[in-house]
Length: 168
Image (cartoon, rainbow, N blue to C red):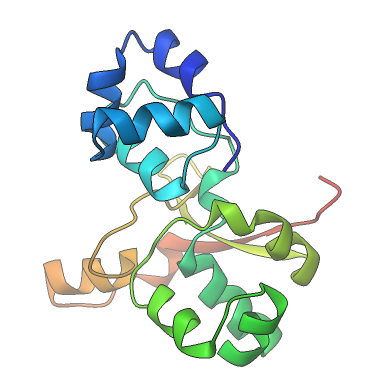
């Protein structure tokens, strides 16, 4: 994802070493990403998780493997359709990507081209606001995690689908 890492790192008061540790990278690898002005979104997500003041794009959590699953179901598409539309080498790669809820911001343009409107999984806050799901669990989506924690399915009224049109 294109991102001014240096500017954001400095804004957060981090040096390169601290940012590299937050991303789970070596200082040299992180420096290379910073110099290019580009970083895989999985590392940007790790920095955000470890350094809450680090800002991601406002629409970062609209583009995850969980939102991909929701849109595939909504539009009746297969993994083979997604592999072709997103230029992913094989259907099995799509299957592996969907085993965990991972950020897919690099595919933003593909999402917007293929899904109009884009279905964004959200949760409803107590005050009625819709908030995109930001917990990208290594063990699957938030519903699966909630079920494992409580032994029950989450209440349907706590999850909402928000539609995003490309022109917004």
